[in-house]
Length: 329
Ligand code: NAX
Image 1 (cartoon, protein in one colour):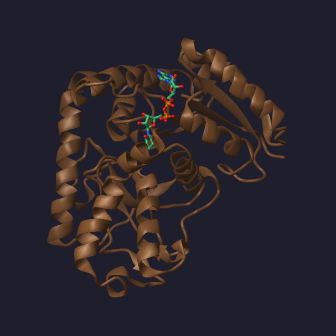
Image 2: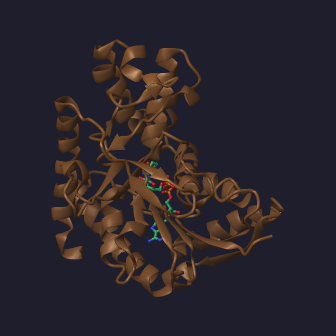
């Protein structure tokens, strides 16, 4: 067996943590031949709950799970970590303004960015799930002196997966037939799942689903409002599907599963100015990955005026979020 990969997870005693850790331990993130050490960082009041989760992980007798670290100290949690999943965040309180939520979470991600810079492995790769995910990733990146900005990403894969399922249902095909579906912009209701460049069974999606009103109307609304619909139905926010999307995100990036030839996936990554999206924000883009720690933004896609307008709205929102946390960058 190879050397274990150290995976740090924040918020491991939360809902997503509970749906995520067992699947990492079973090899679904980094492959069936890669042993893992789980480094679990919680806040002190949640340490008892975390100990319970750790007991259950032991009781899973996972052959790949070599060790666990349970801590509320960020540097200990990130020590030598190769993969860092920043899931833990403060939920929006009743009546709390979005700007205050940005600030409260910003403080968490400032400290965690610093601790990653101090303690994590040289090859560290960071995936942020805790909301507002793109801006939290930006804050962590800006406070991690000496760590390449490109190592900080945020998750928009759940939006991609949600979009693919809706499109597959509409076309009456298995979800695996829907490819090349990129989510642009912010992980928020402004994000844009680009159905114009997507494909179904290898054909342009818009030749298979010709109902443009549905694409621009019900489809977009369903994907953009899916998080809320799940809260309304379940009484709790998406957890297992979010964990599943995070496994997809990391597996494609560094878990050995490159994107298929001609296909791409969605990751929120620091913009390099591609498609006119300004540098200095972390935005959803179509990317190809090699499964070994590298990704590239797909170049040369045509974006219609409609798509550009949608993407701009989301980029404007990212710029506003950035302005609200300017003192933390
Ligand atoms: P929970 O409230 O169930 O769990 C959060 C956990 O994080 C708690 O155990 C809490 O103690 C811990 N925590 C809080 N501050 C921490 C800190 N400073 N260090 C370490 N741990 C800390 O939330 P859950 O449902 O698991 O969701 C976690 C985050 O994911 C939320 O911010 C949520 O909004 C976000 N989501 C992001 C999604 C995405 O696609 N990017 C989708 C799902 C989810 O809504």
